[in-house]
Length: 323
Image (tube, rainbow, N blue to C red; front, side):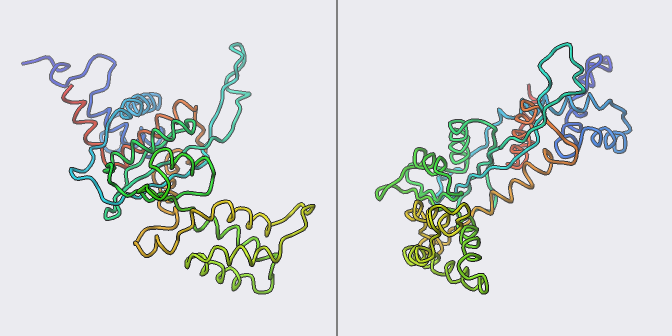
């Protein structure tokens, strides 16, 4: 008979691996308070909230090293999207003698969520970070490779029209006539600019006017849309100039508005997939009511949520049991 601690693979003042997994599982989706209540309900084990927090964050940090296994065959067409969402961050006071329960600085930081999937696939591969554009590029590239990126893969990128995102896409996947990569500005971002302009151009029939311009865009009549907007440009000294804003936004990005080509190829023209990912991958846990995160903890939780969304949860725990 082996001693109980040896048989259960647990040390004094420690948690068994099955209990660690349960607490991390609960803590990945619910508040740490809810995690200990679920542990009590399902397993009859009472643990402190600090224990659930410690286990969840420790495994969240380690799970980021799990690599998603790419498909055996490279994909022909890859869809890549990138978008940001604001998450609540708390910064403790710097004074070591101050009461750390008071004087905390609350702010919002943008987390970038990257995804990639084969055109013929349903499930996406996700990656997330609070990092700089350079770090975002590394994450986006890793996600694309995990989804099956190969030298001959056609990459269809969709994101908002931020210049740094367009430049980053071209650096990662290529650009130009000889490239197999194409970047498309999110159709709905363009529509938002046109919707604001419609209220200034024809307030009495703004919805009809907006639909007319959207139809033109879907048919690649970008110059016609620009011409219509040019007829109603506000004076340069106007503080509020929705028409001028829409005209400038579309003019600077017209080379990335091949909506007709994307629709004909069965490719998305909107980044709704990654925007939906914000809700079920990141915000479902990191934006629950009353939750404020240290940035370092939030970063590790991003990795935990992404790995779970990538369905690599079992892989992590299997490797942990072997070691």
